[in-house]
Length: 295
Image 1: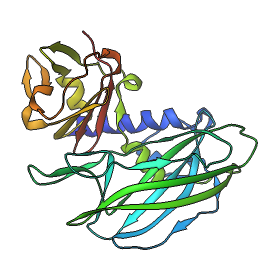
Image 2: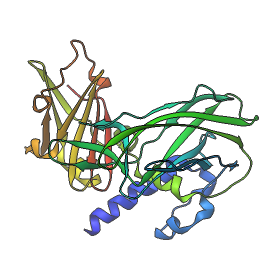
Image 3: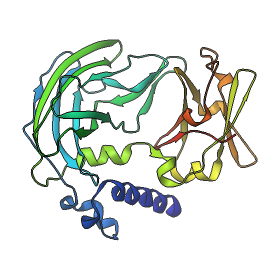
Image 4: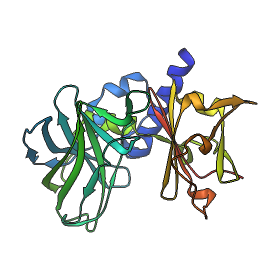
């Protein structure tokens, strides 16, 4: 238990070092996580979308300035108690969220950072998402860092209690990159995002393609050092997405083995590239993301 806690703390420190500028990152103890002054921010006058059935509010909240000088701030979506909304891939049922940034000004690109979701539903009708709402960090690449940013988002999401319904809202936000502020919601969401194998040195899975079936073999020690209670494997191959529950995987020779043959509703593309196969392993406390696999 102590080793696992130490490992998770090392992962947190690593993520902080990736996003925070060098001059404010110091070798630290657990007290670091309590220091709000370590987080850089934006001066943003928040916009708000008001209450509707199941949907409480949405607003864009103060963000951070990353190590690479790109601003990042958050879209905070609040729902009524026990209502849910979806991850970037909703699972077996649900509505895939869509966010359109085309009307924004002085923004070259916008990237949503998705926190680790939860799995909810029964054995056959289950989804991937967030309960009671979520804060989605949005990393912005400005066209000109010296000029103000206007972020306009057209959002199309699904929200559910017993029945799922689509919900659309527009929200805008004028941003002046000005001075430091802290924001624990955004930082917490970033720390909850999948640990990327290419950033931490976690070994890529071995992949075998045979008879229209993809088998992935993960190093058990590497996976278990970052995750507790693996729940789901999400394997993206081109436009095909395979959702494999953990109980359908098995361990052999210190490898966690999972195969797309277990998901019969999808087919592998006729042509695929190993370096573009994207796998997200969702656990109860964190998630791991692998892009690519070895032959």
